[in-house]
Length: 315
Image (cartoon, rainbow, N blue to C red; front, side):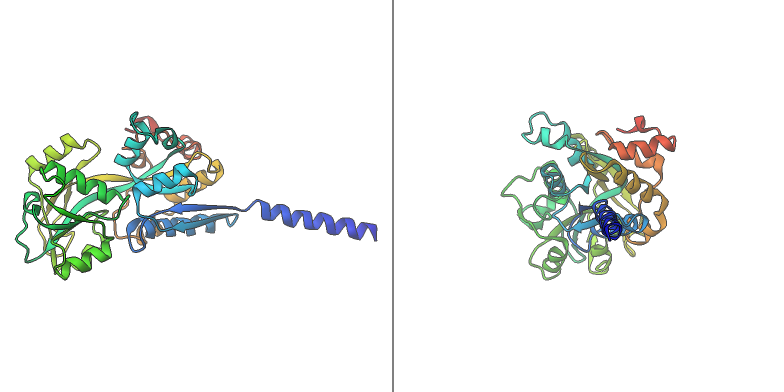
C-alpha cells in the first residue's frame, strides 16, 4: 500500500512538473486584418507546433508605439514595431521612457513598410500640399502610421489646423474615404496592403517627387526611400514614397530558449509565414539583422552566432 501511494505521489509530481514547464506569453501585433496580426498569429502557431510547451497568445493592439509601451510595462513579452520608433525610444536621452525602453531587444527585421497615402480615384489631391484644408485619417493613436503621417505632414509644412486629422483604423478609414467623409488616409504597411488591394479600382496612391522624398528623409532619418513597382496595385504607375522596417522584438525577460526557438522558426518556416501575409517578407538571416540599431535578444543572438551571421552589420 505504501509503495502504491508513493508511486501515485511521484506520478502526480511528474504531471505537475510537466505542467509547470509550459510557458505562456502575450504577443503584441496590431488590429486584426493587418500584416502584423496575420504574421504574429502564424508565427505563434508555428512556434507552438514546434514545441507545445510554449503557448503564445496573440494580442490585437494599436500597433508599434503601443507594442513598445506594452513591452516596457511587461504586459506582452514579444511584438512587432517600426525600426524608427524602436530606435527613438531606446536611445532618446530626453525621453522619460528611455530606461523602460531598454527592457526589450531585437530578434529580426521582417520587411519594409511603405508609407502609403490613399485618396479616391477621382480626387483632385495629387501631392502632399493638396491635403491643406482636407480631412485625413492618420491611423490609430499610438500607431506607427500616426507617427509617419505627422512626419510627412510636417515635412509638407502642414501644421495643426491646416489639416483635420482623425484617428481611424484602416477599415474604418477606407469606409469613410469611399463615403466621402474624409479626403485621404495614411497606411504604413507592407505592400501590397490588403485594405488597399481590395479597393484598388476605387482609389489611387500619391507619389512623392524626389525633392519631397529627400526633404522627408532629412527631417526623419529613420525613414528610407521606397519605390512600389507599377504592378503593386492593379494598373497604377510606380509610386515613390518613404518607408520603415518592421522589427520583431522581445522583452529581455522572455525565455532565451523561447526566443531561440522563435528565431529558428522564423527562418525554418519562411514559406508558411510568407503565405500568411500579402507583404513581401525578407526572411533571409543575413538581411534580417540589417537596419537594427538596438541590441539583439540573447536567444536570437545565440541563433545568429550558431549560423555564422554577422550581427555587427546591423545599424
